[in-house]
Length: 503
Image (cartoon, rainbow, N blue to C red; front, side, top):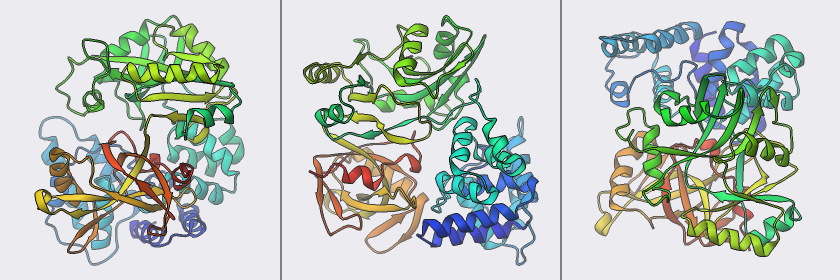
């Protein structure tokens, strides 16, 4: 298959807002890929690289000066092989060798292929073909139930592996996927809750109520003396968090998979700002002396027994058995008065609020459902930055007023729900003005429009009906809390989650 075919399909998927058309177009592409081409093609249309990070920075990519090829000649295998060789280049002189290999690839690519590669390699390939759409395309192409593909993807954590199994082994191969200690599982996600009272009533009080900590999501795996630590995005950070590895090795078990948060604490034992915790997750960290403390809230496996399908009550029992002192505080089946006191106590301890979780719910890995709800004193949403307007007054020369969007749960496309410049510090204004042009989709005299790639946490006083924006709702008194580099665009809240905050 020619690489140009993938590029054209990417453009076609990006050009339509029809979910059905996106899936059909992608399924046709996947169905025509040879077995050895399937893994890279699936990864690319999902905006990912099978090789992971290549060690190629934005400046290197934009500094390439080679002209474009006139004829489409690159094959999928040739591009995949070139990227593999770049990723495998290590040691002395590695950077120069990577640049040389990249330049060779660039020189044989057409202008459209170069544009696709630039966005793919810089992590900016957003075409509406989010993983959820590619999952459905895999199911259509392989003629298997989509739920089987979703579960296999949940357990493998890698869509190319899942697609290959669906293609070669069909339903039987997909059913063979199991939780594997040492292989990250896509995390279960929470939805914003409107209030304590509504969440308690929805589950008739059969809930676990836990502190909502302002930390970084981690997943810890252990088998014997081997330990793995993964981030929310399934990145392996084991080598950078020795204190978490040591703690995991000290647990009284042979094998375990734990889900939780990790925080840096100040001398008084209160959480440090989120940005300080996240600094330990950087590729090059200068803050190793800032110790991380884990707080686990779920147990997915213990000593040979998988617990994904077990109810939360059973998983919680396993958690408190294996990690009693590292478990997030929780109360089981409390009445409303106790929950309100617990909520106040969480805030007094420096936490964001509470999580309310249905006791009978399984672990819905990779999904955001109503079984977990986060309750905070002020509503917050994780939204996509769709654009920014050039400021005036003291903001002259800076990209300021943000255009904010939620995800359409059906198509994956962004839906604009408001604007804000409130909460933007001088440091954030400077950062936005440097960073946003790297994500530019188009611009005019007043506004830079962005690909929906950056996730920002927004606090708001509520939501109201409005005909001003496409989603028919608008945010009330929205202000920026922080950017969320630990979250992917597909982790942003949906338009349905926004509408649930309507009075």
